[in-house]
Structures are given as structure tokens and as C-alpha cells.
Length: 77
Image 1 (cartoon, rainbow, N blue to C red):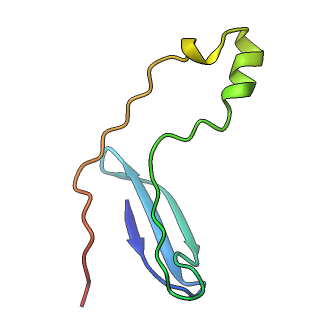
Image 2 (tube, helix red, strand yellow):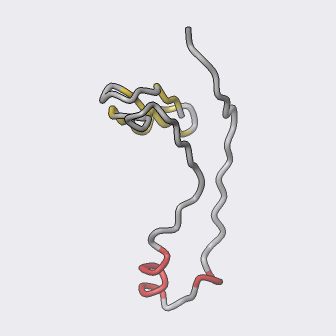
């Protein structure tokens, strides 16, 4: 993931999978006051739909694995 921070509409978030660009967002990437909020991980917002569709409960969700590599915070001059 590559992020260009901006509290204007010209910030960017570019995501990669296996070295290939998969998605790009151009938008405000900081709060209007210039504060940075960064969260990442597995979000399970569709769990209730999965439970309804499969008839299984949360305890039976298939394993979910995410690997993060090269996560750094730095300045570009």
C-alpha cells in the first residue's frame, strides 16, 4: 500500500497484491484538521450475512490470514 497524505482532495491510497497495483483512491486521506487516523486489518462487516447464507455461526468462520510486509511511516522530502 502506498499512501500520499493530504487534508485536501488530492491524497492517494494505492494498494498492491503480489507487486501489482490492484486499486487506487484519490481523496482526502487525513482529517480536515490535518490529523492522521490509520487502521488496518480484517473487517468482518459481512459476518451476519455469511451466518444467514451458510446457516453457520461465527465460531465456524473459515480461517482468515493477512500478511503485512514493509509497513513504515516516513517523510518524503
